[in-house]
Length: 338
Image (cartoon, rainbow, N blue to C red; front, side, top):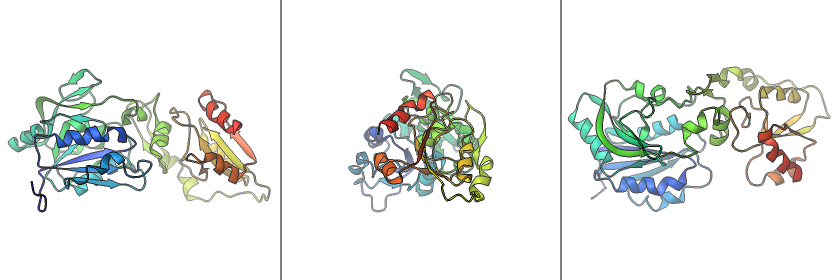
């Protein structure tokens, strides 16, 4: 096949974040498709480190393109970035941790070509290792991997509006037209601990788990199917837009916050109002109630990366403030021993 003037019929958008271990398998699934008139657009949403080594060897194929965000922007923004770059009239999705079988793209493409009234087509899907859903999984919503739709002017809801696990709210309900089911099992939604919906849903996941995993720097508007609506943008607008008035205090301390802050985390700003400077070293993998940085109200410098000991030595904090909630004790102990 010649690619100089190549015009794909289907654009496959692959969102990627911290799951490079699945990349080779996902790309191999695309290369094995019986339908060959595709392009693959990989959107790396600021995964830590350099370009995924799993991608390098595949980029010689001009049908495969790779783009990396400088900061994490969220699933909606990543999918929209892929759609904006898509040159085909049909959009399919393959999250890098999922699997499609050989005839997946051909099956969905044929369904849309043969039914002009349909705006979206979807297949049966294998999930949770052995279960099969004829369409929607667990009476919730269609998963990305099982869907192809016409490229329209509609776009995914992005982080500045809402972060949610509900894909109907984020996009599917925006598409107006028939949604056609194809009675074929062509893909797998892979079950593993770091799936986005698990990171988002309480009680194991939640807003703080999500913030920590994706390194979210801004306040979140957050609502999942397993928790309450949270609007940090409104709640903390004053702290982010108004300068905190510090007391005249030449003896302000450098305070290192360690682990997490639990509930009502903004109480810590009272220390800054008294003229103290705040730093944060946060526990890994918090639960929803373990408030960790980057904190949505700002004003705290986070310590991140493997050189955290050296950073603390440079700062020379006067006080270490660590809550002894049981989840945070290992982090506090690590700092104490260092």
